[in-house]
Amino acid sequence: MAAAAGYGHTVPLSDGGKAFCIIYSVIGIPFTLLFLTAVVQRVTIHVTRRPVLYFHVRWGFSKQMVAIVHAVLLGFITVSCFFFIPAAVFSVLEDDWNFLESFYFCFISLSTIGLGDYVPGEGYNQKFRELYKIGITCYLLLGLIAMLVVLETFCELHELKKFRKMFYVKKDKDEDQVHIIEHDQLSFSSITDQAASMKEDQKQNEPFVATQASAYSDGSVDH
Image (tube, rainbow, N blue to C red; front, side, top):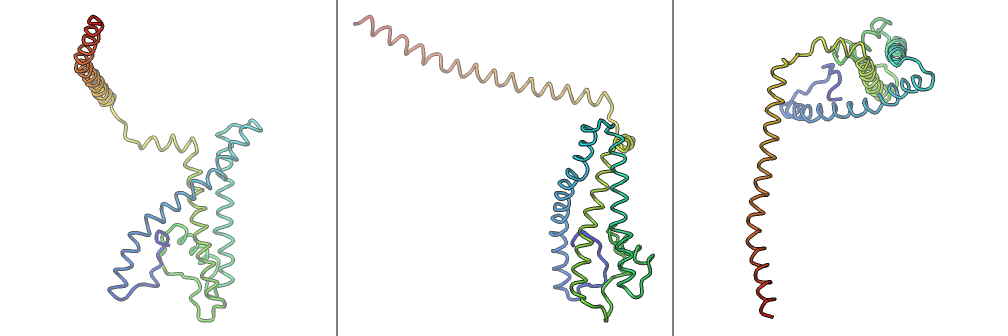
């Protein structure tokens, strides 16, 4: 994937390959980020917001407390399913890896660091190597989405929102008042311009209406 971890064990050697890699990265990275953003937003609705709202409305629990418990449980499930269990699987499938090295590979990959010092499926005696590589690709894609969903879930917590506000740049009240006054002046000037243009249109139409009315009255007198 264009925006995922780049291990560096497979690199282009020719100039044409390097140029293609640059163009592919420039196009692929934004589209990959858009894809991940769209998927994470939809998954977050079903995995985070609806369960929290359900427990809050149905059982009457505090929404903040439900959100905290849900975020902790979701983080624990994600770490178990995408770190500990895959690390145990990799330690069995890879002959030279122990559990710590396998967990290290999972963390480096899903955090999109990708150092390339541990790459699965590179052994010569690896059985079903192509299928194994496809499975690893699916694991990395699903794991990356799960990590982003967990981060989005924690970012929606009320306590973290208050913590993030500490780092926001505060605007001075004088600047806000100046912006409001400028906005009001612009809106007032636009309204006066519209009123002036309407008056000009009425003045232009008044002689035409008056001449028609006078012509109609003269014709009725003649009859």
